[in-house]
Image (cartoon, rainbow, N blue to C red; front, side, top):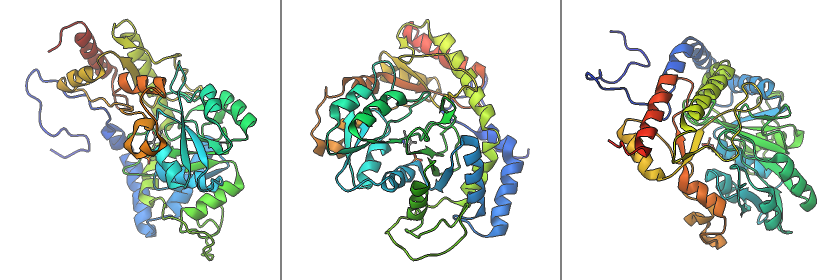
Length: 401
Ligand SMILES: *Cc1c(COP(=O)(O)O)cnc(C)c1O
């Protein structure tokens, strides 16, 4: 038998059901394989594997898709954050207000860019930074605020902007998870001075390794970030600016994007809208099935997805009782889950020097204790969602096997 990209490792025994992986994109790859292959061959022929014309093509296509004036392709979402903070003018020792509940990279990027993370709590009904908490922690040492758009919705950007204006804070966004999320038609990452996207494989638009991008409408931020990603060389060497190897004016990094990643991303961008719609439908199905289950609480402040209306469900999150026991029960049934995020950032050992103690940000701590992400990806079927929901029901009805 010819080996296909999605052929299972081993045949299943009688009565055995295939596992439901937390994330899988083998069918998508199978479907897109002719386009991916063609793009990859173009890179091979071109012979420029880093920072070449495929990267430039992906940048301009993504700029069209998001409406960004500039897209700067880089090697990860994390480096995009570091470059964004530096390009936005963060100076050593200045504070950047970030939520205590987010992926670690939000705050470590601040440190890597020379700044100090200043934590704020999240909203009571949602996972975005709470503008009132931002106001409470702002001082004359804080220079920026960087809300994070987690899972399936935007942070309260109007509320953040109102506080930022009062305190003279620059607004950046960790929009790493937020491709396809828009506020009044404006894409995430363009609601302040700039934002980022991550193309980590399991993200909504995933590469086959690490990749990321910076989004901004600001010419100077784009110019500086483009220079920093390439050893601080002045002038963009891909995109709209012609290739010139000018002398280095600031020490930069090597944060360039690989052309083979761009080749895959370019092919996947063509089916991104379909994938986003599919995610919304699967997530709505989870909601219908799990709403009546005791022990499961819908995401705080939950509103139904509106397909095509500026919401992307990157992760289907639920808050549950006995979270870790449920995750173990699901694992036993062959169902993958992830804990987003197990430890609030103010209690991470690497930020112990900031002197926080448990209880400082109670909402962030609550989310860390009870949030669980269920499998969700465009290759999934409604039957697989049903299997996950059956197993969750079994757990809470005492029919644990
Ligand atoms: C994924 C993610 C990042 C980091 O992106 P990488 O591409 O993995 O470096 C940063 N912030 C948030 C909120 C993320 O979800």
